View: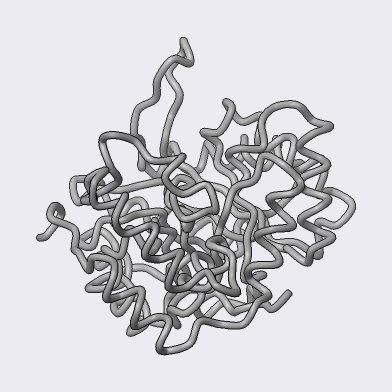
Length: 304
């Protein structure tokens, strides 16, 4: 599988990353999925301390231990479980980040994290203090690089200007093209990579399509619009391609994107996604057709 550089770092990640949130807590099943990912050439594994109260990190660390030096582990920080573990609060403080990273290292069974990401962020955060925490962890060798997971253009802009982030994780798909207007061009200008998630739009862009649709619609699409658009995409594009292939290649067509992170709860999904990213890129005509059928929208909030 092809690899792409993450920003200005020396991290080279597979074009398909494994989003580990949907692995579950059954170690044997999770191991099968992770090992299938390794067999397909995936070297990028994305988790967070939030997932399954840290159990996700523990399982991933255990399975990846024999190949630790050959893989890139990304995890996230900032969401803090309460004592009852029935909710969490946002804490981007330096003190919490430096405390949380130690717990992540312990669970992962490693002495460094390749990519440590802030799991959100607002303009009300103590951004300078947050950056300071990541820079100190980097100087100490505890993390190799850091990034943020955010869809907020104003927050992304602030970190791009003030910090040495190498990546921004954001939702992006044919049905959610909001990053195209500001975020992706901004990242390209700063030589920061986008790591995209949600490429299949909750299954709407898989072969199941409308079976996955909700009456509420998706983002700024009504159910009626989806009923019109999805069959068009399939009819005009999926002649010799699967919908999964079109969806993942759509993300990879963006020069700012270094990896598309997709979840998997079955080995078959890993194989299908891996096959899709190794297919031929979309042509200019195919991309133009997608743009003509789907909406180009922008983030209405977080403008300042």
